[in-house]
Image 1 (tube, helix red, strand yellow):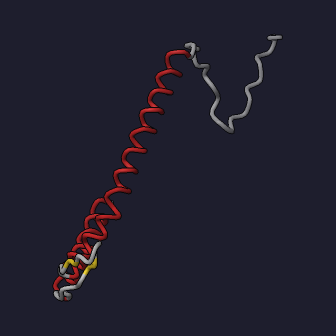
Image 2: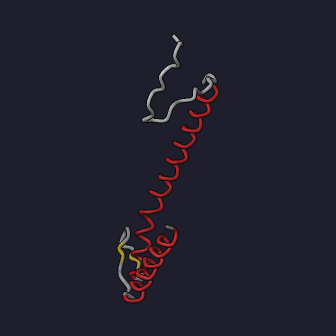
Image 3: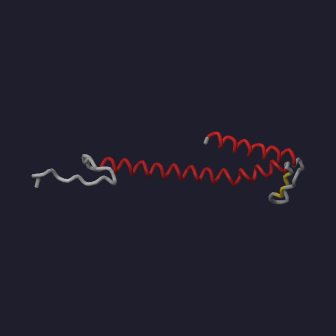
Length: 105
């Protein structure tokens, strides 16, 4: 699976590099108060992509961190308060019930 993931990212990197090489023109990005920015097209697209990706990635990481802390805390509380009950040996699923021995009531 790691091999496929590596191949996928290599293909994506080749596509991005080809796009940057094939589009060297400079574009105008209008900012505020008449201010203009003249980056290459690939740089403007990369910047806008990262401007959308980074905040969402940070929010995702923060949410996972918070939920993991809450789950660990709940697991610890459950472990501390649960009584220790010995496990009974159970028959595997689908096993036929065993008849009691003769003479046992």
